[in-house]
Length: 116
Length: 112
Image (cartoon, rainbow over all chains, first blue to last red; front, top):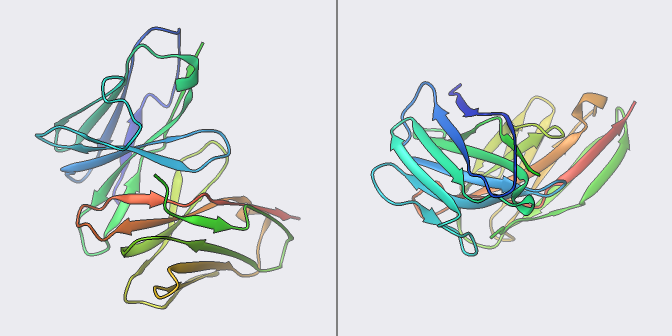
């Protein structure tokens, strides 16, 4: 099946710094990608929809200035957590829908962010 | 915001028993999918059922969908210790944009 990669898989940073997470669709093009956040023992919460060539669409309650999303190409979306704080520590997962007949989304392996 | 609710939140069974998890959702959907997630890992897609389907099988998995009740169930038969994981239902909204919303999840523990 289609593959979505994320980089880095794990990052530890100091409070106040910015962290960039990459999401790539490896063998298919994705005009849309999704970013989720998952706190321990909780479900995935949709943060935003990343759109190639246009602005991202953020879910209610998600600060667009804090979570910068750039869909640079048909295979790459980046999420930058700006001025990170300990409460931003979470598991961030991206996904890309495979626009074939199965309507399936492929998920990246996730990025574990720890803000000290 | 999440639109799916799942029950039970946690389920502990013996190996060999069947595990049933339920999911309810709120709005019109294009399809519903079930995923598995091992602790701290990414998601594994298990099965997709379309809004015009009522039941689907895949190996030891059986999924049902009742669009009138806006609910779905996942049955894992003859469970194994390796089935221990969190299971999430995810609904793809009928908005044409593949927006997917996850349920709260069921944490399944299968005792050997």
